[in-house]
Figure: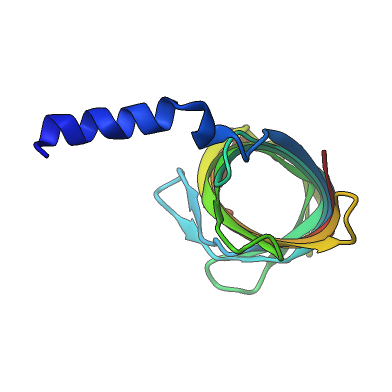
Length: 214
């Protein structure tokens, strides 16, 4: 069989009704509790090129995700996560003065393409790339000496990342428990009193929750 005939045969098989007879598209809704651990650090300030070290504290939140499975192995997922009160500690170059910084919210909206590994139906293991639009809300800061405080708006950011997860069915009515790990490469950018700042955020997001497929 030459290459052209082989390709035609494959296309004919893919287009035949029997190729899709055993699969029906489905939706899955997931409800999560999440632990967010920022892995970035290092602030770039545009005044004289000064660099400032930061410590990024973890936080918690909740969210939901919806996935449309259009084949046995592929699904498109849309997700929303909301967290609050994420703390950042900033020190000056000498380390003698510290600034306490609190982010009002970290709220990424993600869109991804998941690949579901064939497992025979006992568990669902998946992984895939994602893109994200990240809203950081406002930053509230206070200097440890003198008690000076201020608020700063942070720009929304566009990021990318990946997800890996597992769903374990409960019974036969579409319910499951699940856990996933996401990584999003993103940064916080803004201007406070004419001074621009830019720091990596790059969180790892561990989620656990329940899901329902229908």
